[in-house]
Length: 614
Ligand code: AGP
Image (cartoon, rainbow, N blue to C red; front, side, top):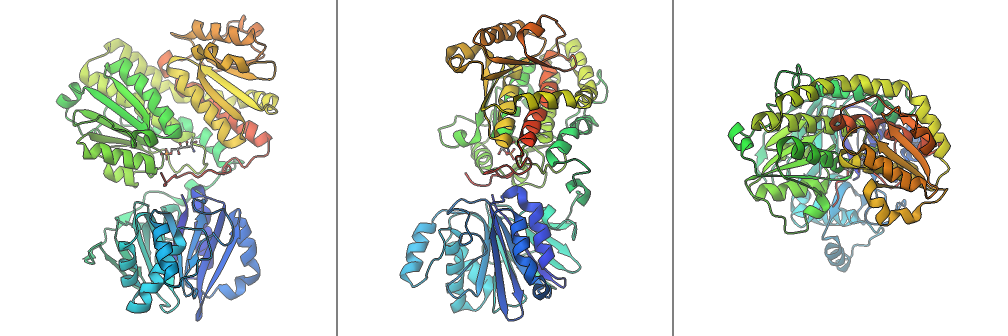
């Protein structure tokens, strides 16, 4: 949940670290710090709050720091100890000669700390990371070899870590290592980079080495040596990176979130290309590595995910059950891993994750794999830990999503579920052929319909403005759009901090209706189809309690004008495809309310894009 970066080479390191950290801000942003090897000293600078605070702090010293050609940096999402200067990284040993930055959690840090304190180490912070600094430094005193000291120290660590470590006695050596946390090395003519994620160095290098657990890399300006957990040297596999730096620009939009919402039509087109050619040709999904015989006989599917990805999975359940008649369970990964889950080799387990690094989901899929299940991963990051664990990999190719609030990755996950469900139905011959042709034909028209919604976004902005003063918000829906209501509420919560909740509309009368009065906005997702009349009745019930009713609908029925005080109209769409359409105005409502309230849209408080702690 933090981001780390390191560099050793022939270029000035200061801006490499600061620019790299900027690209890692999605991993955390409550404090930051850098350590630079300057002459015969290591200089450490830290600041609380956004990265700009660190930049400001460094500015008066910039001239003196520009000669430094080796350094490490960190951007923090606090787990152990509040976001303060003392808890910010780099953390140092007693004498300050060894510095370390860390992403992850050292689970046995209390035991290690007690032991090190007994041996004379004086701790300054509340972090788990400081134990690593003292431990490695203590071993270094004996071995006088940083790689060896890191190798011995990590044998004592439990938990997850990506570490970058420097010692003042080793002026040109940076040592990095990882276990259960991402770490990638960038190879360039000017030297070596190491970071939690490739955007941190992609403008300098597009050649990457994804480190494996327990490997230790020793980087100098001219050499790179990697050893495995047993101390054997390994030959690194260098991969060419596909992403261009341009993907990280706002392209004229005020926020990444707004840009990413607008990218959604093209994201869908991209995914459909090569998989859905015409409505009467079958879906091509070579990524699914199960034989058609196995697919035909699948008895059960489990979908595991967190947050927004979980909501995509809930819609996936609806689609697969309707079109393929295979029972599907959907569960939050964090719950899945701490109960006696029943899964086996006849169960297909689908892990859904934008980042591919979410610790809960990663643990869950590893558990399922250990029980013999085939694991299919739907992710936006084909280079992620989850992708590497996958038996089948469905890469959604939405491009880098910078805003912490997931938007285009959600629509990409949904699109992948539609393709998967139709593909399974075609293999199993479990749905009416004509219905599938109609569905595929309408699917091809979805991007254009989203563009229509985006071209009327002023109307949604007005709606957002009207309700931006509210303290609470309720979203109601039924059937396939119940997860849409949950996702709409999650978007609003996470970027505006308004207390928003999604309910199945039929549940309103079983409790939540007690909260309704003339201060409560209730947004009904009222799409034509199987449950339209039901939601309409539930909306009447809410209106009878004076709630401020808003409709998100594709109906043009004039009677709605009496029931709803605001109506957002979206294009007509098949009931089954409506989640792809209905979510877009809800993303925009959340965006405009947050923007109107002056919130930090792309980096909401307390959140991080990649949640690598359980
Ligand atoms: C989405 O807006 C959230 N930031 C969050 O719920 C996210 O979807 C969740 O943490 C799961 O992340 P993942 O898709 O990368 O696994």
